Image (tube, rainbow, N blue to C red; front, side):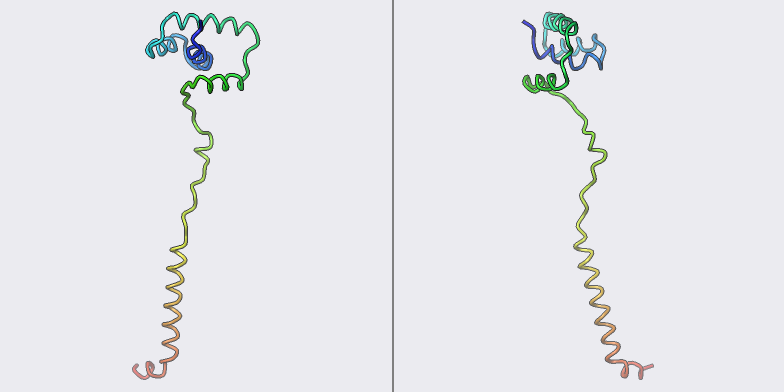
Length: 117
């Protein structure tokens, strides 16, 4: 009986890595040489027929829970959420209010202030 995990691992990775490296990784994970040989025979039989589609392979991987590392394509293009400018507007409002009050005070007391100079 073919070990489905080894079979799918080889099917997914055989085009990306050398077969010898894949065999070493599988053996290091605790599988036997027989598991690898059976999976390779099964892959050769399947490759003579129609190749499975991407959707079929993904469904099989999801069924047997093979850990797959993927890179997010959008992670580099994602925009960071904008920081709230609430405090900036509050501070600007307070500064504006203080300037208006100072201006009003100077205008109201101008007669008394101008006599000092």
